[in-house]
Image 1 (cartoon, rainbow, N blue to C red):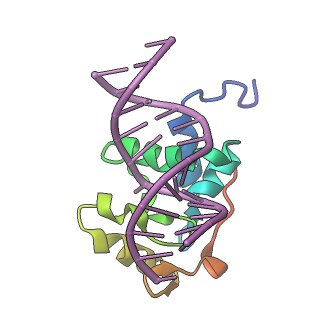
Image 2 (image 1 turned 90 degrees about the vertical axis):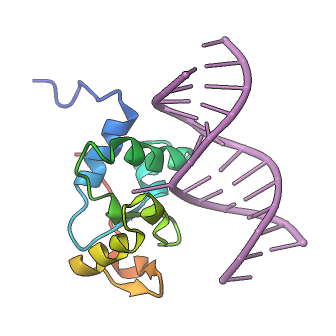
Length: 111
DNA sequence: CGGGTGACTTTAC
DNA sequence: CGTAAAGCCACCC
């Protein structure tokens, strides 16, 4: 029937769908997701959306980092260092405390 | 409808 | 590399 004509009006749902599509061993940024949604100026809302879904949904929000590749969301984790450990465990490379976006940045797309 | 908030981003010093 | 300030848009009360 309608090819996605339903269009999830929920901004959050959009973010969840993209985050859920992030392949293992890859990461993406808030601004990039926002841009994919057509609102590059609403990068804050992306992280906000994850916080709203976190706790209720099982999304790999640890794969979402900021523009610098820094794990800004680690402070919302039960154990902050866990976020970095998870990424390393998945094969994501780090430069100090930041993700090597040069090699592991993933380009989000709406499925 | 209005005010407050925020897991961002950019620019500036 | 550090902090500070402004812009930004969606959600909550």
